[in-house]
Amino acid sequence: MPQFRFRSLMLVLLVTLLGLSLISLCFGEAPLSLGEVIAGLLGTGTDEQSLIVRQIRLPRVVLAWLVGFSLGASGAALQGLLRNPLAEPGLLGISASAGLGAVVALYFGLTAASLWALPGAAMTFALLATGVLYALTQAGSTNLTLILAGIALTSLAGALTSLALNLAPNPGGVQDMVLWLLGSIADRSFDDVRLCLPFVIAGLGLLLMTGPSLDVLALGEGEARTLGVDLGRLRGLVILGSALSVGATVAVSGTIGFVGLVVPHLLRRFVDYRPGRLLLPSALGGAVLILAADIAVRLLDTPRELMLGVVTALIGAPFFLVLVLRSRRDML
Image (cartoon, rainbow, N blue to C red; front, top):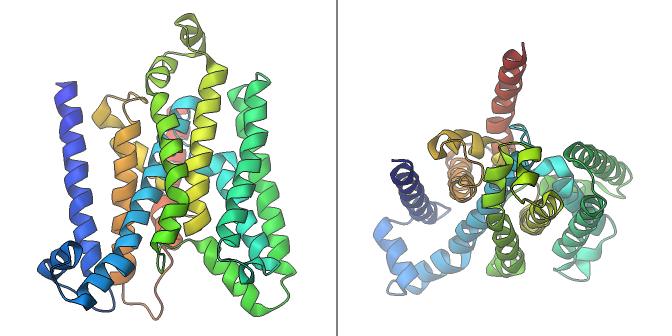
């Protein structure tokens, strides 16, 4: 029965993801029917339809998949590693560090020299933060040390980002920084997909490797050590996997929060609360949530299209508050 329920969950998530992907390809400044979208994908439609579907909307959908896969799987892995239901990718400071790198590139005008300057700077800063965290895992630190280090990195990156915004030489620069930090997958191309794809694949591969160990860790650290789990190696794999996947997607989409917090909670009961088995469904669920939010962004009648990070925050912040209140009630 658990195996059947897991397969059913995966099937539902896959069908939902494919359905939302087709719906996303239909919406835009020039609405297309489902038949026109399929014709554009297959190359049997008009040149205009093929251009709209393949070059404009398909990169947006693929990037939504990559962002959702990264945030969902990283959130599930971190919650399993730290045994903390409130953990999510932003907890370790990787997202904030990547955001700082992008702001630095915008502040110094590096984007004028190369289109790759912004994602390159974001990836560099994310890897620097990863290096700090990985060094802690090699030094035999505890989960509490990692959490505190992540909070410190997040605070430092946030303070330096605010400083850059405060000292920005012109209002246009401030606007570029703020809009990028709000997070979006609009106006992206396959160049952005190609940039982050190798890192996302490598990161997800590392995270999926941790599944069996995370299941054992759910019994407790002492029991996990007795059963042969190398906690230092496990922490290193989760941190490096999260950094590669989340850092790469933040580099091209900006900061999109709360997905890694919300999705594992919604799906955990369907995998019998096994953190290792939760990884793959959370990856698919993250992509579903990102696509649904991105479709909502385009359907909402606003003077200007909302940023994706704003929508996910509006969904995730109340959810986070409910979790905090529930945890507090369980402790009483």
